Amino acid sequence: MDLHAGQIQGFFNIPFDNIFASPVLLDYIIKNLNRDNIITVSPDAGGVERVRHFAKKLSADLALIDKRRTGPNVAEAMNVIGDVKGKDCIIIDDMIDTAGTLVQAAKALKKNGANRIYAIATHPVFSPPAVKRIEDCTELEAVIVTDTIPLCEEGTKVAKIKVVSTAEILAKAIHRTFNHDSVSSLFI
Image (cartoon, rainbow, N blue to C red; front, top):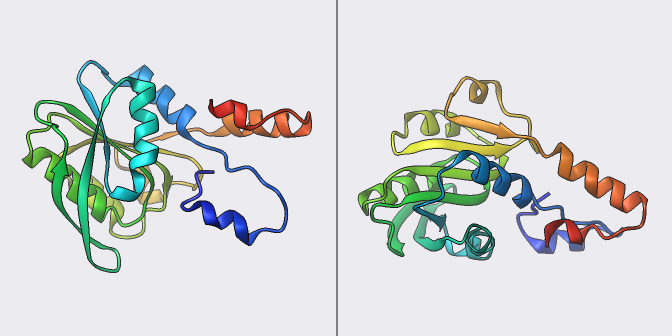
């Protein structure tokens, strides 16, 4: 689900489908967040295509964090590209590892006048000190992740971390595969 890089498919000698979590995450946003004044945010240039998909589905604008890496797993958010002043921001990423990028992005958005800041990600890797960083980040209202990776015990104790299930989308994909139907039609 939500491969970090499409090239990963080349390492397999059997066909498979890259299932997307976007329907589950979009459903959460639609049902739980006020969408009157939102902007979707890519935490880096590599995630713009993913965020553009969400922006289109939500009829929202898009912003981008111009991020520089100063070392492995060390990110420093430099500039916000797009107008986030007075808006509720939804940072969208495929995974959260150490949460360094996420926290820096939230701080940069707040510094540029953002109102509420939420984060959405498919894979909660949460390598230390991710949970502590998320818990301590006052700029973040909530971090919504899927259950593709079991949430670490420490993460279950943080109220702002919410987990949504991918069971239904995976069940539909399995059903369609078994019946020789299109899996890709789930994501159109």
